[in-house]
Length: 320
Image (cartoon, rainbow, N blue to C red):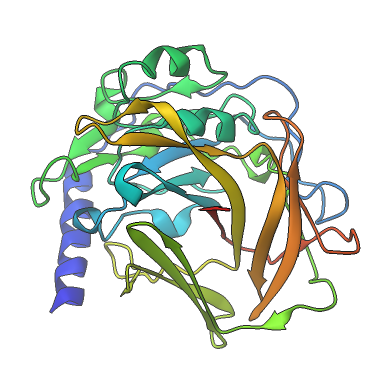
């Protein structure tokens, strides 16, 4: 019954788009500099030049927001802690743009540091705490909230607000920029020697959890959130090829939500420990990001660069 409802919601969303979607004004389609391909240092074949910036979308991740739309088509998904120990996702699109993605929710201060690794990214978000808005305006990115791009967003009447705001990405940018826009420092290729066989791995936030289960048939990690399999509105199971559990410092910030809960700040510049899940194994590695403008490098104990498997990557930013 639940699966049928999800598929019906997916068909409803598609029907709404068939009626409403047209090519609208393009915003945020330029980015400075020559982006570094995400397969640099020999991790994969050189990528063609980027045609513009990545699209990063803040995605709601409470139970009322699920199932999400377009999440399976992201190249990269970050999971971060927000107020009250809950989680929120940031989906990054470079090689393809879904017809619809969402539900879209608000930005956080630590998103600005995380996004500095990309060259002039476009950030789609539903709003932000009023003290954060000036910082977003000064950041080296193109903000794309609904009040500036109203034709790119719509509300799904079958879901309750605020969990019903969706984005039509092709109204922000005409085409996907390509893999070279993913200036993350990630390497893709054959796995290094070692690793420990593991079929299931769970990461816990104070009020949410992520479980990744290895599927031999699909050669992917099947995602479950808060004990429920993660599927999109059309019934597609979300299944990244690589999962990174990155131990980071999560501190209190000077901002809070409308209920008075402090907004956590997740530090992604620095160094620390991480675990990389690929090919049914877990690899203990070290991570390092020298500055906000750099990508993050992952190495094994002997200093060997850690290659990721080809396909979607999830990075869970877990408190150390």
